[in-house]
Amino acid sequence: MTLSPETFVVGVDLGGTKLAAGLIDGQLSTIESLEVQTPTLSQSALIDRIVALVHQLLALPPAPVTPLRFGIPPTLAH
Image (cartoon, rainbow, N blue to C red):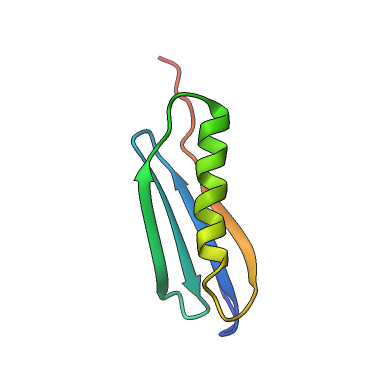
């Protein structure tokens, strides 16, 4: 991914045990990263936690965040 220096990206990684989010600048340096346990009680709790993490990161950068990226594992059938 090529970014301009004034671009900021928020990335979210949804895992089975942890939920991670990070704010990355145009030089691909991590400005801030957050990690919490993945809520498993309900989809609503999961979405609320993702939204809270993204809002925390959006409050940080000196420039607007343009893209938002998610990493979500697939469901595997055996």
